Length: 236
Image 1 (cartoon, helix red, strand yellow):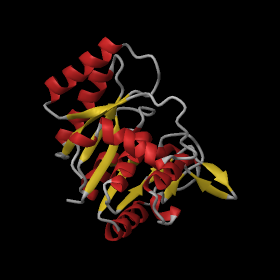
Image 2 (cartoon, rainbow, N blue to C red; image 1 turned 90 degrees about the horizontal axis):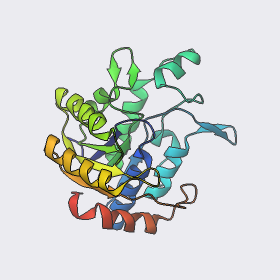
Image 3 (spheres, rainbow, N blue to C red; image 1 turned 90 degrees about the vertical axis):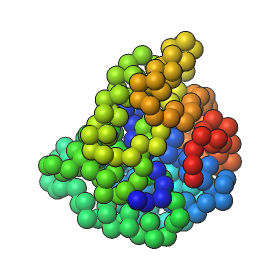
Image 4 (cartoon, helix red, strand yellow; image 1 turned 180 degrees about the horizontal axis):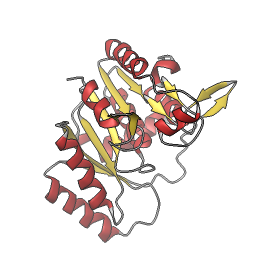
């Protein structure tokens, strides 16, 4: 099994990128040689003629790595769609061999890897190949990122059931407050219920980071936040 974590979410927009970057920054604070990867990204934009994922750039900056962008984010599409849909619109398929080769390179270079998935576990990357299959091939334990709001129990339990069905190792759950204003009772009881019904450690809660600039990453601040909120519960 690889050393590191694969970060998935219960849905799009739950804060996988922030959590993945925060964990990478925490690794750096702890003195680990950390690499990051966003194997597949959609909704990318052009920078100096090159298609770039803002999420992958954030991960690279949060980790402070000199790895080439091409291996951090080997597959990317401009359209903000499911990966297989975006691939079809571009008259292509997702080159999984390219993904696996990039992962192998990063695995050799670094002692620890943080890999962020696209969407959730059952986002398709091929006709019969899903994000969950990629996690299994990489051999990384899984961290599930979820919202603190109403509905998160159902979404999180479904994600965990799917992971268990595929015999993926689940390291824990991180609750990310991706928007401001969640009711405190809702947050507290959701956390308690998730722990009770899954038997999986809730590693911590990331508060809403008002004004945090993901374009100009303050690695020290990010590392300190995750050290305070997650650090005592996570093994690296």
